[in-house]
Amino acid sequence: EPEVTQTPSHQVTQMGQEVILRCVPISNHLYFYWYRQILGQKVEFLVSFYNNEISEKSEIFDDQFSVERPDGSNFTLKIRSTKLEDSAMYFCASKRLAGRHTDTQYFGPGTRLTVL
Amino acid sequence: DQQVKQNSPSLSVQEGRISILNCDYTNSMFDYFLWYKKYPAEGPTFLISISSIKDKNEDGRFTVFLNKSAKHLSLHIVPSQPGDSAVYFCAASNNNAGNMLTFGGGTRLMVKP
Image (cartoon, rainbow over all chains, first blue to last red):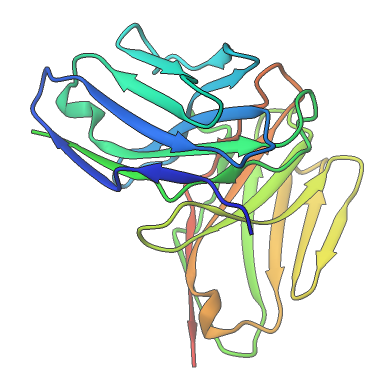
């Protein structure tokens, strides 16, 4: 069964450093997402991406964040200058159809980011 | 942001009995609701969904009920099995451009043998 994959599973970085989190969505999916979950808190939407551009972003997704689909398979989240409060689990998700919000989003296993 | 709330952080149920997980929402624009199950160190796994045009959707042991007037949905698992022990999240969306999901805080279900 196809699945969303994410690398690395755990990333440790120093405050102020740049990190890139990588995701490989399910191959025939068109819509891509990043969510995060700070320990003990809710899963929060960060950004959605379709047709090589951001479709929607939350208030969390400020200028320190960017997303890219550098090739036909990867979808990346970059944090330019990490802060302590960026420590969280970051989940990538994808869904097959565009324009159909009733289509299911499938999630990857997550990357645990620890900022020291 | 409390648009989706799961008021019970945990629930303990005996194997074979029914588990009922509840979720409330405040945003009347939500028209699609999902339940995800999450094990530690894994991502959320889709379980079942329901559109606002329905009041019930069933898939095997899982049934989701939607009460639009009360802005309330519930997930019934019957019979409950020890493998169902996990954190359950409800999520909601509306037909906006990004179709983002808004999650509740989760309910940890423990099914005892």
